Image 1 (cartoon, rainbow, N blue to C red):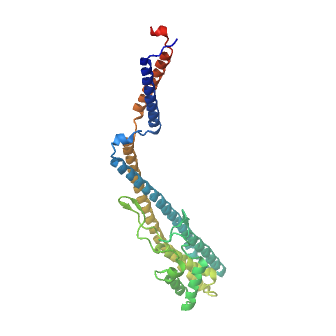
Image 2: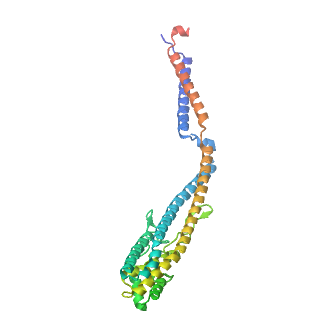
Image 3: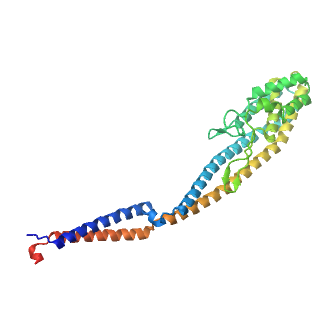
Length: 335
């Protein structure tokens, strides 16, 4: 016969309370061990979350900078690749300067067709997009940056006819004027927007420079060289191989000179790449410091938590053992 006294009832009630408390501790410690975050932040901060809020704002700001850096880096890398492709197309300069010596109309026409193809490729490179945005169009982020080769050369041919240009030097001047600032290229060739005042903000003290555009002088000069030679493929100065040969030489010389302007533009973009690398390293370091600070503010020490968890498990096991023994007490045990 098992006897239950008032003292036993009190003990059982206390055991239940202790069991509930220890189970709650086990759940809390398990959460803290798995998440690494203290469970009772209100108690830890005593209701004053200002330090934590400041750190969280800093982390959010750093994350926004890293997004801006990644997007700008994508654009700058795309521009550098496009300009490298543009520079590679310029290896026609040497052949253009030497084809004059042949005096061969077929070779001159073939050189013109080659230049036409390269002009189209150059324009395609300027129309390149990255992340759904056009790269060389200034503040305009969509739509074509430049017109196609036929539209540009047709406009130049109209000017040649209007001005009555019948010599290589006169044709070359028409082309140079077309691509000069304020010339036909600005209204017919370039379809983008104005140059941006600056690029995005990369960190608290770092603002990126504006991207290059298809209106930059280095780009204009390079396109002018291709257009000048491309006219040979459209029978400009037809019937006068001497003047066509001189135009081929002038276009080759123009492309050769334009190379330095393109290199300067590539160097400018290279400087932007260096700025991006510095800003990224700075922001990532700041973000890491802030995350460490946040962990110190809200983190639960994994070693202490593991020790406390083991102690709670041991206490619960002890309570189960005591409860089992009390439940087996008989009158004989009681007496």
